[in-house]
Length: 182
Image (cartoon, rainbow, N blue to C red; front, side):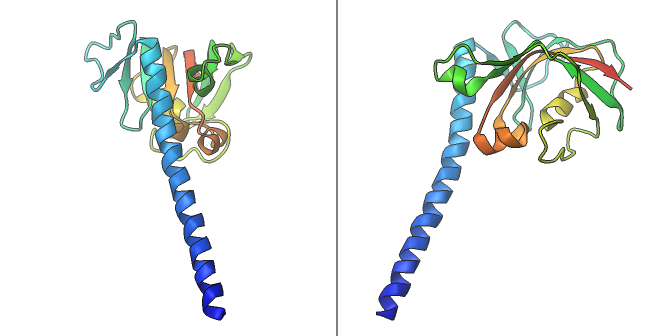
């Protein structure tokens, strides 16, 4: 009897363990599927190398090593962000890509940011933590652009907020502008 109970416990534990690891695999696959579906639906061309002349075509995005998709519309005024600068950003709108890909085209989560989002810039490798903002995806482009730059971003869940990571949410930021470094 005791052997049967132990055997049943081992079976239940194994089923639970393998189902959880399968969910994690599905979570990663889903992020990639969502991003690739959005890229395809928008006719986006993904560049493996950052353009030498810094000119991006209408639908060209650079894929960073971290998995962030960046399209530079305007590279800015030349003033670069330094470690410990306060960086202010605004954006035209924020799109929930997961819902968009599922067919819900009215998925703008927030129109133009009414007041700037601010964060202390560390560098692209800094762990910005598990809070809502700042997110690592806002720091990565600062290696390529300067103050007053305007960019579009496709942000996989792994580079988003804690909520994005937990719920596997991919976002698209339209006309994100780095408005001030100080």
